[in-house]
Image 1 (cartoon, rainbow, N blue to C red):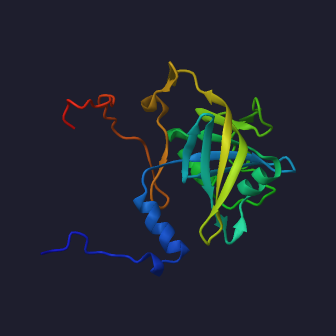
Image 2 (cartoon, rainbow, N blue to C red):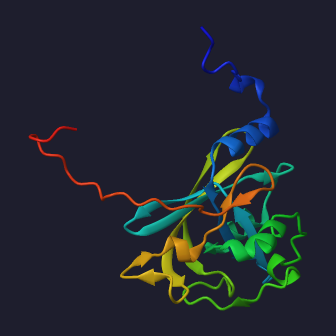
Image 3 (cartoon, helix red, strand yellow):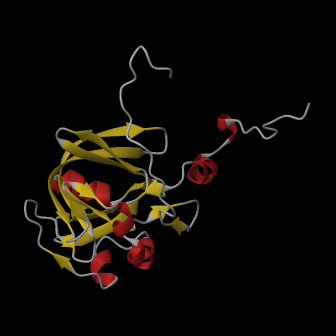
Length: 212
């Protein structure tokens, strides 16, 4: 009988780069946290992170994973550690090129937003500016971080203090995903949209008299 899964890869045989390549092709599509931080010198750093989710709704809290570059701490992690604030943006499909370019290795003294011609505007509750072009921006204050693995990855969690949402995207507290057109990360330098949306009936409790 032919094996259903003929390929087996032992995790112990993978180095960090090989595991990254494999896992980023498996865990897809991934939402992207496009994060601004502020350096002690007042430089606005901008970087995308696709290991991103929400971790609490009361209070609203977001989390994203920041790896290291050649063993060094990234500007985002350093800046959050310095002032405890950041802004998470959701990019739509029109922002794919600047979002991808913002992942390049810019020197700390060069602000990615300025270098890429992205306008910023003052935030309401944190000192870190937010991107004017992003359809959604969430001002956050640092809550905690957790280190994972041997490569120095650090998962940062922040509490959202205020949501900024472009007019027309949110009705009765619910965001219209089709109108938002969020950008998602795939394997390698590849991105995708949401594609087709299928709606199903809301889940409801099953009583003892009903079949599962």
